[in-house]
Length: 243
Ligand SMILES: Cc1cc2nc3c(=O)[nH]c(=O)nc-3n(C[C@H](O)[C@H](O)[C@H](O)COP(=O)(O)OP(=O)(O)OC[C@H]3O[C@@H](n4cnc5c(N)ncnc54)[C@H](O)[C@@H]3O)c2cc1C
Image (tube, rainbow, N blue to C red; front, side, top):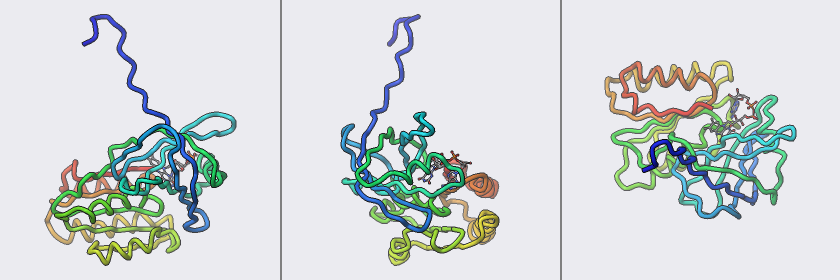
């Protein structure tokens, strides 16, 4: 214990990792994945859903932006981050300008929007576009565990090219995940997601034992959270992350 009056110890510093961009994948015209191989900083472990803070250089200044780890902890050799262009988005512009072989620095992992083990009896994932990133390793974890709750994924995008990882969603469906895709113009996307969520998990029955993991951009995420909590789902059972 510290002596009375002694200055408080500084919080422990997170290690800084250096990683080389080993390869890239363009999902569509404005969405890309980078596969990062850590070359310095030691062993890196994380839980499905966590993010890293990537160091960026913006107008000559050093900044950080959070990017979710889209791959699973079990994929030990590289970690994947997946991101999309944002109008006047300087951070993501910097990432799009990186090339295979370039190095990036990051700290982490961070975040409490995590799923170590899929909760019983039913687990619902709701995401839009690139925000499937945290959900992807969660579903992989849930499918890989022995006793498995019922799993559903409601996945929305502005057009079908922005429904990412389609080959995997087909595999998830084959493995028993109740998968539904929703395509709607950006201005209607959250209204449609909210209406669909209301229909499926609020109006359809009075079962309120489900757990939800919701990820997306902007206030629509909070509207989904409020809908579910307001409908009687436990606060702690409605997990969400707003980008
Ligand atoms: C915990 C967390 C995890 C994140 N993980 C990812 C990720 O895996 N992939 C990813 O692409 N982004 C992710 N983001 C968003 C990311 O950190 C940046 O905000 C985004 O790339 C825009 O940064 P920017 O500097 O280019 O633009 P800024 O000028 O900083 O942002 C401009 C606006 O873009 C909005 N925005 C944020 N993300 C998006 C998006 N994906 N699409 C459209 N608009 C967006 C913000 O709400 C903000 O209003 C995450 C954010 C958080 C908080």
